[in-house]
Amino acid sequence: MTIKKVGIMTTGGDCSGLNTVIQRVVDGCKRRKWKIIGIKDGTDGLYMNPACVIELTNESFQFASSHLAGSVLSNGNAHTTNFESSARAGKLASFNKRLQKSLHDLNLDALILVGGNGSLSLAHLYREIYNDVQLVCIPKTVDMDVPLTDKTIGFDTAVQQLVSYCDQLLLTARSHHRWFVVQTMGRDCGQLALSAGVAIGADAILIPEIKFDIENMIKHIKQSKRDYGIIMVSEGITMRGHSGKPADMISRQLNANGIANRTAFPEHIQRAGDTVASDRILAAGFAETALRAIENNETYVMTTIQNGEYKTISLDDFFAAGKHVKDPKIIGAMTSNRYVDPDDVLLQIATDMGIYIGEKRK
Image (tube, rainbow, N blue to C red; front, side, top):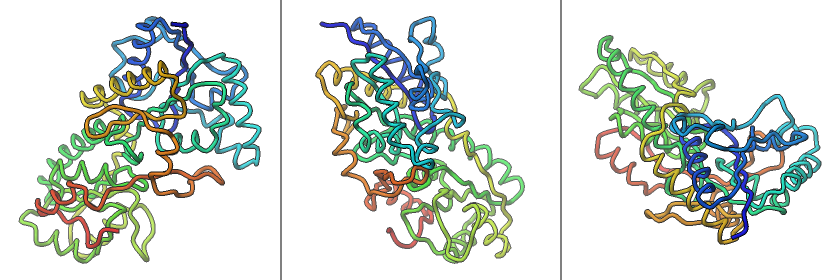
């Protein structure tokens, strides 16, 4: 077999599991006697002249670090030219040409792009950037908003981080007879809040996909047999006539009804933490699926796991399967979003547990 030169980069928000998938790709390339390089800072580093790259070896990336959160390659640099700044300046076409030239100059046979739904949507939209390489994408995000895959790298660890965080909050909540309103990540998709909320036995879970009535939620809290607990709130929820952070909006309504409470914002803790076993297994499966795709000369594909089976799907299928919304940061771009399904089994489980989840599924 001809020796291949493979590149890998991580893009978008960071999460646990990125270093694990990098390590598994490096190991797989070594077994195949392929050369593997890492592109620093994703497309931001690819724009640099020359592109910011490192050769990934046992010396440059220690195996013992593969369980750590974040990415040894970094995910982007706000101080460099990137998709967002180029779009604002009306120079997106020249930015894309620069990326394509950098890939050509690197003389790669294939590129593995590890990204969320925004990064994958951009790869689909601007596929001319990758004309000179085989492009294989691996989905990662704590939001679980990528269509056509049952899991994304980083999600399970984020759920565990939230569960551990809330377990500690419950101790002080009980001591002071108060409620905590915990705001989770999940700009558009409430899967993270739903999963963590069920896991800790929250008294209420509010997500963007389900309309809720604040008065009914407060009635539910007042009827609780406890005077403390957790109200899990996804950052993507809205309340008509109210503004500010979602947790603060809910907190004000609780205060107005005499319910003692505090807000809590775990924020980037959700994207940290040692990678849990299920995310490490997922990373291994996605890495090997990506490398097999390269062996089979596949391009413009994404790795996926569906009903326990690892395989690849086309980026066209990925994009077509989701709901298309405007990219919040890049003018003129659209992202393909996945949301909590109205028939998601966790919604029924939450209902059976007596958790308030809202009034009407959107």
